[in-house]
Image (tube, rainbow, N blue to C red):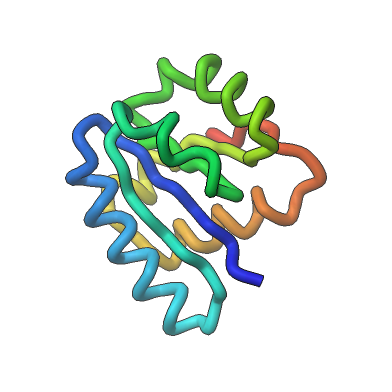
Length: 112
């Protein structure tokens, strides 16, 4: 079953690069992930179809607002570690996403 992962950042550009890297890594690892990037202004329009929301590290100030929206929607969430985001490391992002998706709840994951 396809897991839908939504990445958000300020304008959607850097998360777009991160999503492209993660899609490539997921394909290579034969993971059934649909990974999309959106700007923070598109978050609420896109959240309904997401299994997992990953927030760019520079938007961590939004986590309480995001947490509430995700809990109401049944969506897991986390803050992408700065090391992963800064290097656009798709493999590490996929590993981070899998850890959150495997958990029983959507507790914030901000470890790096």
